[in-house]
Image 1 (cartoon, rainbow, N blue to C red):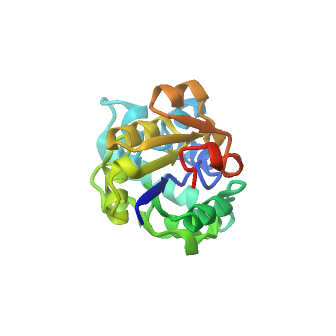
Image 2 (image 1 turned 45 degrees about the vertical axis):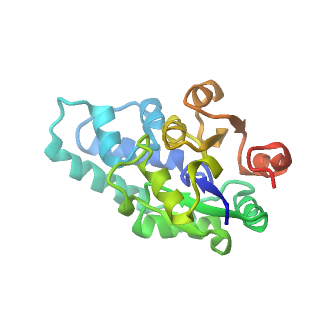
Image 3 (image 1 turned 120 degrees about the vertical axis):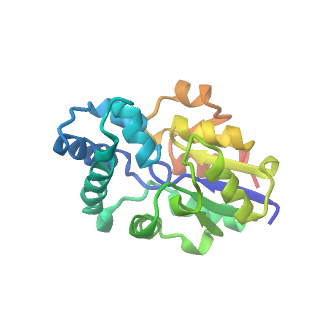
Length: 219
């Protein structure tokens, strides 16, 4: 395949951002930290280590980070069997696969969480490869996850489109050299996404699918 459509997963294909916010909020609370939900929401999309550092700062006790991370994983894991795919997610991936795109997931999830997300999407037949947190040393906004996804697809950045929902996604995709498309279903405002590198913005996967002919993912 000569073109790659690389997708973030949380907040882009599966409606999980606010579930993550709730799980992180409770994990921080259990560790004795008061972190406002709006701040957590803006940090979703970072790796767990980077999210904790971003929200608690350098003066925190870093030895407590694994405890907070484990609490978040346990709390979020209670949703695994009922994660909701966003409208049109499966249809979008299948249409792109049909149109000759290599469809690759680039996500900070791994293991059981990644399996739950793929079950929720329900389009494994359209997915060429997956770049997970286990495959890279640095998460978004580092370009490493996108670059690894492109290596899996065997496609150069100039022939790739990256679709995500956060500022961190857009920064990572732009640094990797891919054309960036943003979705609003993760809850981040359009101007923030455009400033971070989004070349086009759509409401959700269903909207992108309906507008595909005139989008960066046109056949």
